Image (cartoon, rainbow, N blue to C red):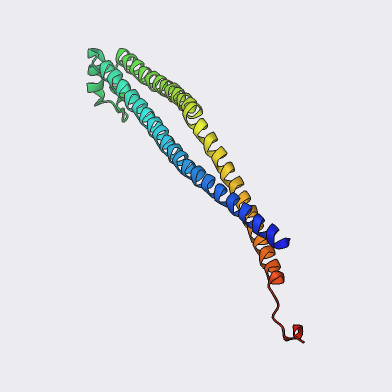
Length: 193
């Protein structure tokens, strides 16, 4: 009886093992594909974030330079700057009259305001990019990562099921082998008389 149970159990466990292995192949293929998609999506989003951030920095610097250039086109300011030897002070401000000092101080205040406004504006735009990128990650990347996690769990479950089926197969194989020995005819000399 153990021989038949072992043989039938071995057959059933072997069939279950092949079925699990086939499912594992499909799940592994899907998992590899989804993992590649996740990696590609992460790279694409990171590239887009870097590009947008770099563009904001470049545009802010250009806007600041254009504003500075326009301020420096003021004929009165140009005279003051010529008198002190350019845009750096290097201690020559004492040559300026009160009106010229006033013009120069207004220029310095305008430059400080421009610097501050540029920094604030740049920070706000970069924050908007960060929020937009985070939204992209939630909408595009999270569903892929969720699917990847589900497939990984399924693959782990299938590995466990395969191990159980393999152990069942070995146990049934052993049962079949042990009972086969007991069913084998015995050719001993003691039976003849």
